[in-house]
Image 1 (tube, one colour):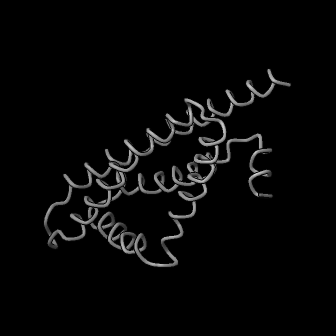
Image 2 (cartoon, one colour):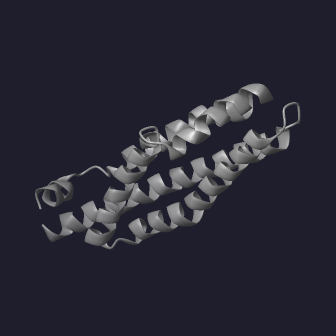
Length: 158
């Protein structure tokens, strides 16, 4: 109960912190998507892929997702705001397909034979990361709007 009361008193949309961490990870990936040779791209992503499925390395992604998700769900259930619903729709309908495409593309890159071109796969991965970045930016926007709506409604009742 103490945690719920504390979360209700926060004035910042804390869900943004986790999403910002994920955007930061995408920015690092973009360095390899658009600025590295094929050998470096394959080395980076083939080293990174197993960390998504092994403990404790998976916490690198799981913690920001859980942090954001818990605050988004809390905001959704306490305010029932249109904007928080938009955040959920954005992340589920945009983020999950991008994440799946990213994982499957990296799997294809890692399974490519030595010497074969992975340029098309790297291009698809770069576009997927751009799309995922746009999804996060849209989700951050909707969270800010949801927070502003909540603050305005609270000010009107006081």
